[in-house]
Structures are given as structure tokens and as C-alpha cells.
Image (cartoon, rainbow, N blue to C red; front, top):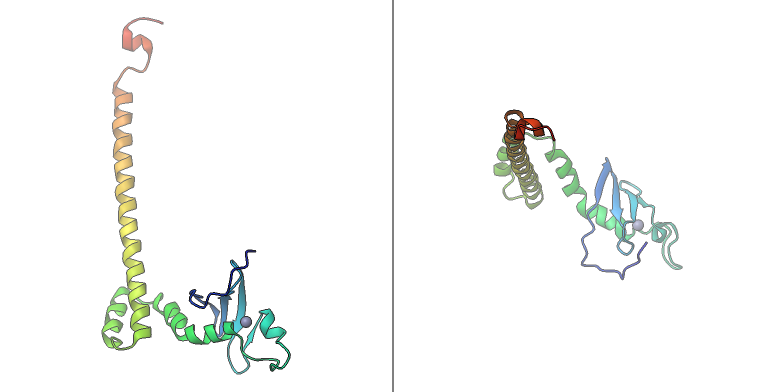
Amino acid sequence: MASAKYDPGKATPVVLIEDGKFFVPSFRVKDKEYVVTLGASPSCTCPAFSRPRIGQLWHTPCKHIEAARAQEAFVIAQAKAKGLTDTEIGRLLVKYANDPVISGVLRVEREARRRAAREAYHDEQEARREASEAKVWKSTKVFGPTTDEEAFGVRR
Ligand SMILES: [Zn+2]
């Protein structure tokens, strides 16, 4: 595991596991994440939370808990947006136009769907093009000579 210098400017997107429970990436260690549980007594699986420095309270909320708290509303809204129809997204975008979290989540979801639709369309076009090329190749083979004898009138 590569240990990088602490970078407060780096994005640490939290991932919702279940209600009140999140994966939070390590701020320093690449490809490492901790499990944060929010609620009445929040907890984190990181060393700073389980072994705080001398003079600190035992269960002082760590930066992962702070990150999960800061992004909780966003990731919950994000999970809910995935279950909405395109029409509902359009309607809710109008209703929550002044709510940066909800309208942001809805725009991100709408854009992801548009991108997926564009990619599906391109894949279909590609498949059709390949199928038609395969047809041309097959018909040449079917109608053209299939042996040297047929092609040259001689047995070679
Ligand atoms: Zn932590």
C-alpha cells in the first residue's frame, strides 16, 4: 500500500453501505477504506478512532466520521435518485431547483442515464455495422468459389 502525504484537497467520496453505515476512503493510504457508522454514538474502524492520542477523548470523531456526516445527505439522496423514473427526476428537478444537494444529485443521475443511453445506442450501431460487414463477407464466401478447382477449373 502506497502511503501518500495527507492532502486535504483530495476528494474522499463516501459510499453508502446501508442505512447509517458508510465506506470512507483513507485520506493517506491508497486503496484503503474504513467503515463509519453514524448515529447516536458514531464509530470508525480507523486507528485514529480506536487508538486516539494521549490527551484526546477515547471516542473523538475522526475525519472519516466528519466526511461521512458531511456527505450523508448527498449519498442517501443519490441512492434514492437511482430508484426514480426519468419523469420523476424531471418533476423533482423543478421542485428542488433551489436545493443544491437534491438538484445536484438529480442532475448527476440524469446525466448518468443520458450517458448510458448514448453508449447503448453507439454499441447497437457498432453491432449492426459489424453484422452487416459479416453478411457481406459471408455472401462473398457463399457465392464465390469455395475450392481451387472451382476457382481455376483445375485440380491443384
Ligand atoms: Zn476514522
